[in-house]
Image (cartoon, rainbow, N blue to C red):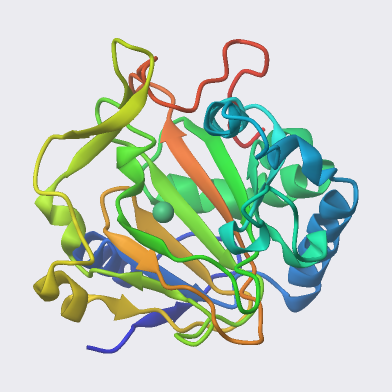
Length: 295
Ligand code: FE2
């Protein structure tokens, strides 16, 4: 199987061929969506955020509270701009073993609302037009992540469906994945299961009655241990500036980056405003920073 890409349109709208491919495959590769200059601008802004980050707050390993603190640091990041560290960048005592510029795994999860550079990128009229082409009537910008996939230590992301984490009734999440650098198998590109969105949702990550988060099976979960899924996974080796649109039900993963090159990407997730967004999803805005659309 080979990857099929389309050239990005000027105004962001999708033609009939693109919409048909997306409906069939559950993903859509649009090459040349972001200019190189804009990729460089976003990368520079992410570097500034990391420069201003004090690693201590996320890396206090010295107490037994660590797990709890790390969980809270993550669970409370839905309306914040926070840096998360690569596992391999921290030793057993919680100390950074690398320069922080090489240690941050990602920045999440409200860059699109709180950072002017990422907000203007995320609210470009072309993206609003794209969302309309995807069938949204009133899209909300739910979550953003800046992913570094650091050289040598960029961690793997196992096979999952985004709708497990960003669940709504009806399901309405779509991921927009922007390659700010070239992505290849060597540096941990996206791998997708074409057509896998048609099998429905496998599991939900939700808060239980005890307040703890866990997965709840609701169907057949995608897994990279499943040999049939593994061999069917299609690597999306893409040039800088590509946009990959991911149906929230599409199983995808990325392997660890053991190469000398980073694989930086920005992701944005959309939600339909009319869909019910449950209070037991991990990402909550709690009224302090209401979700907004493209305006
Ligand atoms: Fe994902």
